[in-house]
Image 1 (cartoon, helix red, strand yellow):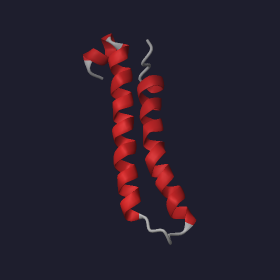
Image 2 (spheres, one colour):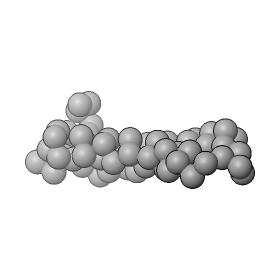
Image 3 (tube, rainbow, N blue to C red):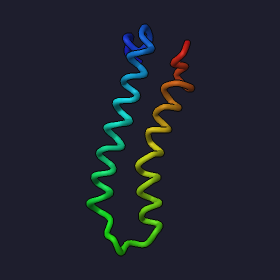
Image 4 (cartoon, rainbow, N blue to C red):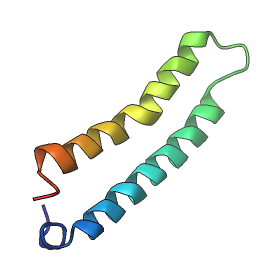
Amino acid sequence: MPRIFKKNKFALLIANVVTIVIWIFLTSILISYTTDEKAPFYFYKLGQLIKYLPPIWLTYYLWIIRKGFK
């Protein structure tokens, strides 16, 4: 992890939030272009998993595995 994140937890928090916002914005655009109105319901459920699961994993890794608060 870069030194700025070890010294400044606010920078780590801001980087995490910005990454999550960018990911959700880009995936929502991609999902809206790739899904059709007549698509089965599980396409929408898979789209929601793709949209929200990676930011949860990133947050878990940065704050729990890498111990962001220590």
